[in-house]
Image (cartoon, one colour):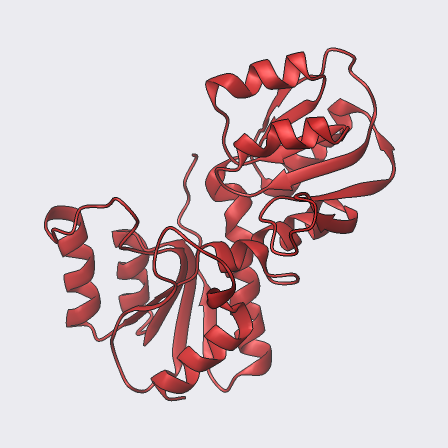
Length: 252
């Protein structure tokens, strides 16, 4: 497959032009013209790049790439080493941040809904079809402990639970993968029983306790590995190339 064909396919699939982001989405580092093997992963770390080199990949597709807003323009140190490795090995780097969070079937939030058995998924932000945070419900109410166990088992890591003072059963839930903890207040205002995200801030605890909403912190990396994994499977099912998801463990 030619690079421009793969790039067009990704842009058609993930539609980066639909949403304003904190980084450029799409091709970030140009490499080989021909793409026969693709590695997907969460973040373009040195370790993931080296694994892509070992796999003799022509392209790397990640959720967290380079050139973030407010990031230094200077290419030195860690960034230089990463980019140098990609260029020396002719590996294309494609990155899709928010477009991979919000994709209705392959996205991080959509994949979490499947893992946690959440139904009737809809935007959390009213009248915003491209809402990054989403909401849904369980087929039957869960205890707070049961949801904690489900999250921990599905993500293979312990999650932090800050209990609502009422300790109410959980029927409705909202979530946002990665660093989406700031949306908890909106979820509480809408009367939702629980909110799940990848990170927790100091004020998150106060919101949960004072607005009577359960909060679960499940890990930034853990909540965002499944979009990249789903992409690899999608490529294998739909394109004439080989794709492989590689998970570089990150406890954060």
